[in-house]
Length: 465
Image 1 (cartoon, one colour):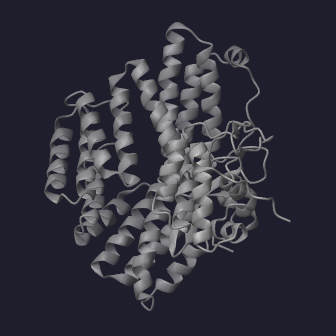
Image 2 (image 1 turned 90 degrees about the horizontal axis):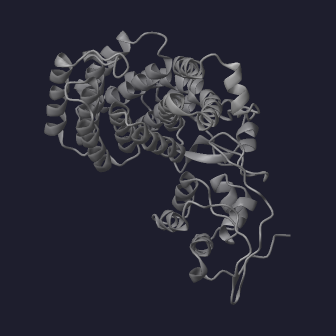
Image 3 (image 1 turned 180 degrees about the horizontal axis):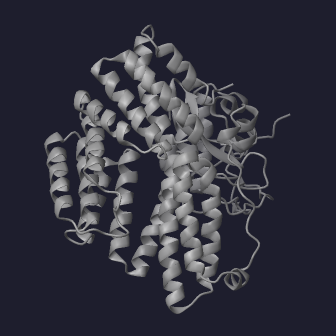
């Protein structure tokens, strides 16, 4: 027998207002809690707690998914934002005419891919899920992912470190060099096996690094903080690449804050550029334009960091539909690169081929698929074999461009190659491109290779029961 629902007064608190409207939307859509649980992949107990004002969702992605299913048109996301950062279970609150139960479940500190509480439904991972014909990245209980047979999506968190900061420092001749080497190893490994398996390890190293930095003083503390900033930025990148946008924004924001503390303008300029990239990739192109402009103001004139900032500006313009500004910015980037200093740390990978590939992405956003396809084909041919995940991204973008030109068989064939790499690496950037390709090819299902591509893509994502 189900639990009796609480009587909620929407005016009592933002949490009560959120729960009230979840229930109202559910009932309007003729859903029971059981049927809503089946459609969203959220457990019955989690939905019951949200609806009855006992707990708020921890992740924005959860709220966005619930809002889509209930056709809330953004209402639930707006109400969730008002609850504030403290989404822990509520203590007993006394309000006339209102009784709110106290939850006895204690939350533990959580990151993507790690247990969120002792409850059986809060150990979640963000995974690609087929919902109403689209592929969305949704927080799903790890047990559901494991039961689906897609165990590769349920990356297991590593045990929390037990060594104290003092012990760690005693065991290391050079803590800064130790963590710097670990970071380099993570970057090298990520492109081969993907972020889903790498991020939990990086987050563990980050926690140990932060603990050590807090016990250090003077120059050691400053060096460790600079390295911690780079770890936060990298964690943001990896979180974005598994589709966990909220965690990505969180790590990147921490990196920007720490960069200001270090006083390293180069580091700040680089992270502002990363924030611009994250913004445009998550649908906030206007915000990306401002962040890229800030990155360029912060970067040293004539540096490769300035070139990177201009490239972020160019793509934001393209996504906003301003082709003239976008292509002019790419010309500026090439001109700046020809005069830029050779930086040992920032942008050592930046060359004309990289800018050309970025330009191809922007041309696709502007609808110039012929030039975009040619640009991606050239980039794929030149990419070293070790850049496995990047190859998958380029293949997926090339497939979309070829579909735009009308060459459906080639698009399906290239897309099928990208599916294989997406399965290996778990990269959300690949899957997101393949989702858009899938929706394009769905309209021409009888063409050569389309059915094979769509079936392969379906095998690497979750489906509602």
